[in-house]
Amino acid sequence: MGNMIQKIIRFFETDIWRISKDDLPPVKFLLVEILKKLVIAIRFFISKRVMTKASALTYSTLLAIVPILAVVFAIARGFGFNKYIEIWFRDAFESQPQIAEVIIGFVNSYLVHTKSGVFLGVGLLFMLYTVLMLVSNVEDAFNEIWQVTKPRSIFRTFTDYLAMFFCFPIIIIVTSGFSIFMATIADSMPDYLMLGPAIRFLIDMIPYLLMIFMFIALYTFMPNTYVETKHVIVPSILAGVAMQGLQIFYIHSQIFLSGYNAIYGSFAALPLFMLWVQISWTICLFGAELCYANQYLDYYDYDANTMEVSHRNRTMMCALLMSCVCRRFAEGGKPYSASSLRDETGIPIRIVNDLLKDLLNAELIVELTNDEKGETSRFLPAEDIKNLTLGVMLDRLESYGQWKLDVDISGQFSDKWAKAKELHAGYLHSISDIKLQDLRH
Image 1 (cartoon, rainbow, N blue to C red):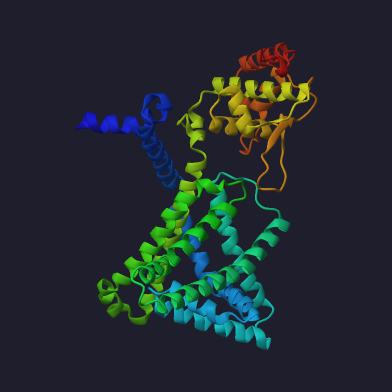
Image 2: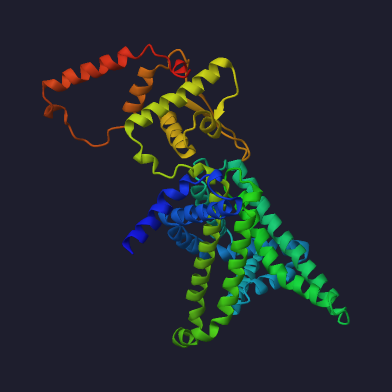
């Protein structure tokens, strides 16, 4: 039994990442690829503490749900479609009618006070703050999942969020109108044995399709990086079905919660709603992890902790990357991206990304990027390549950082330390004439 467990652990930690297309038939290899994606998603879900992020988003959602819906309802009322928005909202919260009534009451009160001029000043700022905090927290959570360190610019933040607030009610109105249209057609065709049930089936599928398309849009546009649509379709379907399954489970579990309602009375709706929001965000973020694993599975062809790479090997690979960057610059070619460096050197992409950060921090290279999501970052030497030698690289990598502890340790060394420093400086000087661009053949 113990040997079997050890074999299973070794398979998921090592063996599964060494399987190539030539080792298995196509169908089995496809299953192994799916298993890899699930393993990566689950591992990151746990290691990145996604449940904690879901809890934080639950708190932000409770603060922002009324202001956000107030904005959506106000836009819909401006076009005369507020009734459709309210119908959609009640249908969306079919499993929690008490919460739906309370929130709609808050929203209507919000809009009345705003229209009368009572809700101004600090109240308006609080409304905007809660809305922006929620959207910003969602973006931060997605960026961390996608390992994006560069946030949106202020201009893109304003334009993207504003477009989202205007498009959301329009999409709801269109889908609600389509649902009403399909229901009318189904009611007018009771004598058609096949067509009527088919249309009814389509109507029943509309909530699933709407949820799936919502996740596709969320997973594609929320991270501040380029996300290929083909990689988010399957995770969006799984997340959409899971959300609808949560709704159905919540509706049918009300009978089991009768004792809970008897204890807390009408107050029971709030903790149950918080639990529903928590699970919803958990589903959403796990779907984002699946999207990331789906798009970047080949980034994990070498499944090991990059911090476990020895200092000597890290230095050697840094020199190799710098040699590629400097030589490409000297030849006047297109600068390398992280993925092209991976293809050129064969170094796993996770290690390439990690080493590029070290080289950026040491001011050996600079990153060329812009504010467009589809653009790939590229890397150039930070200064004249004649000055970039192996000695300069080692010196900057070793000296990067800042001593933060107010501790004087110089007096604890013997005279041998001065000799060691002299020998080390001589070593760096001896390799200072080896240009980085000349390291590769």
